[in-house]
Image (cartoon, rainbow, N blue to C red):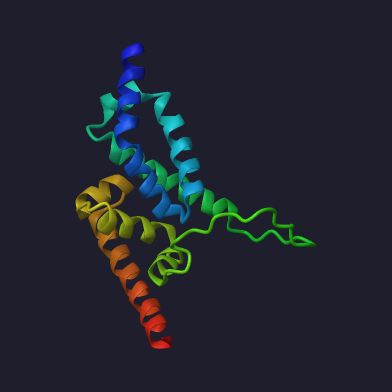
Length: 164
């Protein structure tokens, strides 16, 4: 049991920066990314030895779990919550440096699965086969989602450049 904890701790230490980057790209901000990574690692850590026996690439499994958890949360929370009054803002929270970046805004507006495909392909540098394995979909789905996402990004960014 101690060896399993050590193996998991070593894995987390090595993989954490990449998982946080992937989470940031999925969620759009570093705070939600950290929450997403922590939630998935808690679930995976409790069954680490079983996971190691079942899969050869735990990072791909964790990425797929992160994408699934993010999509599930998005589905649960995408409904609007109307409030009578706006909450007061306290302090001056640090702004996301990419908040007003056109590419980042366009990426944030993509549906979760398309965003995951784009991030894994162009940010993490994974092949179509690796993305398909990570997300638990076929390579054809990866290709179609990437094509739709790129078309959407191209349209949005063209509109932005024409405004300038």
